[in-house]
Image 1 (cartoon, rainbow, N blue to C red):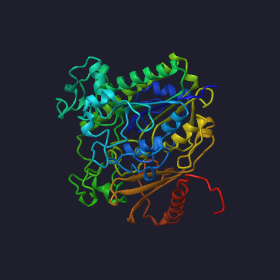
Image 2: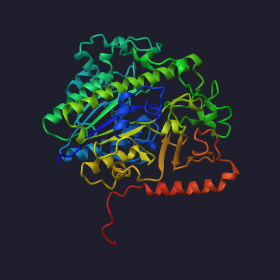
Image 3: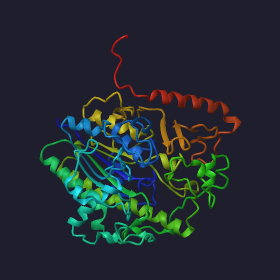
Image 4: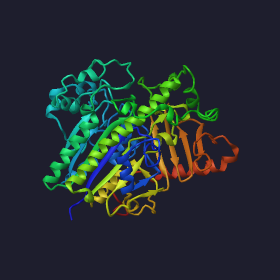
Length: 503
């Protein structure tokens, strides 16, 4: 029998509770369809709550501390072996359409970046380059979110090919002319939006690969709903802000937290002590900058961006049906990490390992193999995707991959392949460096060279508003969890080869 196709569909920075099947405030008919036709894993997590580290983990099957792209502003070194490399060796066709972010927006002689600002707008280069890129035989990329000046690469060429000669009007300087202060409503026609680009090119390539009889690994990587909060109509006004639940801070919840949590709630906090490399540090600033009205509208537009992306996810699912290959295609939907839109008084992301940020939506569909309409509590990590994909392609999993093969769990969601999660966040070499251990009930976070930390009982305190790290009543539990965390770190060390002799 022909080996299965694998279609990975990701959004960017999507909160785990933004699927209509589980949250009646949103409309996501196509994700709801996947929920009905597949298994939803409600305890899925990212290995890092930022883009580059987690995206590199998805393709390497390794944690950020192992593959080397340890934070934003770094890159995955080109010598790393990826799931695409291994699939290509066995004649899979491999393609990435959309956001890559395996490399930074800056480039140096020692660490050149294809996604750097000096390359993004080199359109002659992008006319001739479509890969290979980190195991993807074909890569057609988008680097911007909404109207950002980072627009370029294949997406800009596609807009011109589609007749959008004035595309610069929809993006900010220096590449475009759009007012940087405009919020919420993005005047770009939907037909030229990157959601359309990603779905169109994904569908064209799937049709091409199917026509040639090839099995394929396709990653359709959507940049939304990552801020800025901008969407074209009707999506920008799809939701009434006054009819939505708007999350906020619980009074006193940060009193027992590490200092950077409390500082985010100040009007003008000084995070100088955390700055080590001189580059921006995500989340380490005041989070009180939004008016109540703007906050409510931002949530509404964020939901609109989710629904907008859902429409084009549906286009890809429909194409699989049209081609008659849905039954032999594994579809996984997830995101690279979560998002704050007011929870705990926070916005976007940073060194705050609440469930809102490190937990992700995760749905698997494989007709007649993965059960349909099931919700499972079996833990998943995005670092598990690469080894699991290799298993379904009937390929061995390299010893260097430290993610867990979840194939048996996908086929029988009552099983469990892991009893804990590790999430890493090293955003500066020493001043912002933390790791979190999560098991079925508890979550503990430790900080490099610090005596403070976090300990939450997710069963008794699911909203994570009572940090009991310093509560003497939890002293023995804290010791036990710290031991389990240490064992988990020991357990995820790679073994690139087996032991083959006594000496």
